[in-house]
Length: 131
Image (tube, rainbow, N blue to C red; front, side, top):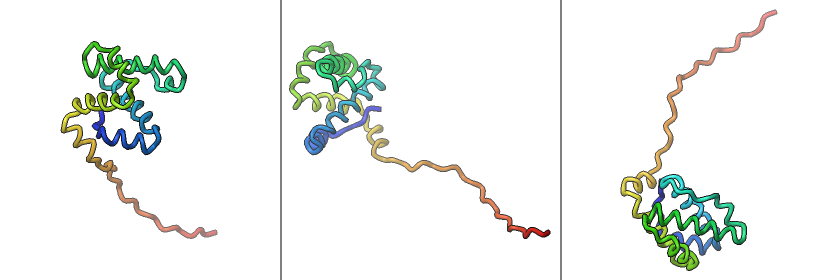
């Protein structure tokens, strides 16, 4: 399920954590697009390798354009990805448009799991052993 995220907090957490949250956000949105939009974005481990991460970024933005945005401007979204400041806002904004108010309510209200009823057990007293 696509998670509704506050765009301002995405930037704030990315700054506070020195970019670690940005990597978490990229992986999370990749997983959401793969699961909910049947996208074909490869493993995020490819981000660790120079030059391969450029191909990964192209595939991420290509799937964003085709599955989420539903346009054919793959190159435009890939080029915009080099402007790191604006791309997370655009991607998260589009994902937030898809989230319905009902899913926001279910994401914010967590219920405790219901445990099955157990029958009370009776303890039998210990009988002394006679020899």
